[in-house]
Length: 135
Image 1 (cartoon, rainbow, N blue to C red):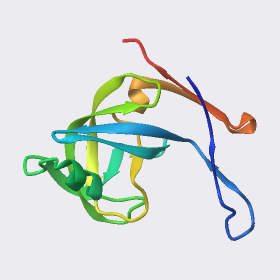
Image 2 (tube, helix red, strand yellow; image 1 turned 90 degrees about the vertical axis):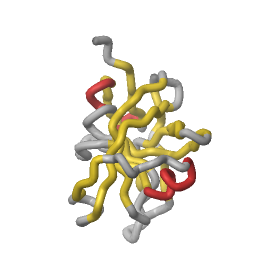
Image 3 (cartoon, helix red, strand yellow; image 1 turned 30 degrees about the vertical axis):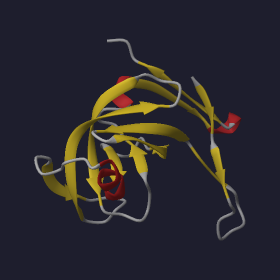
Image 4 (spheres, rainbow, N blue to C red; image 1 turned 135 degrees about the vertical axis):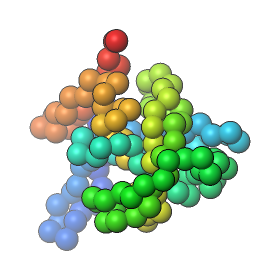
């Protein structure tokens, strides 16, 4: 499935920023939540804002606790498996880490998303493509 890059207002240099973003649906015990997610090939795993866990009332008491470094600095992460569905793609169950951050809502990373999909970025054409990998 082909998608278009999402344009954001100009940065400090006056240049428009384009990012590979798709809408995902996150499934929790008390409903669903839609969020615009960044495809990030540099992220080891999928990250979701802790506010989403609170909104969906996801119980993280049994989640694997650890430290998350990188874009978020150093913060505590709660990792569990969750069902998500990217726009125009099938529902998948993947590991996700919830973190406290104001930087983003959802970031799709290598473990659980990139390894289940063939992803091709064509920024020069303002598009990217995501197709499920057949195993």
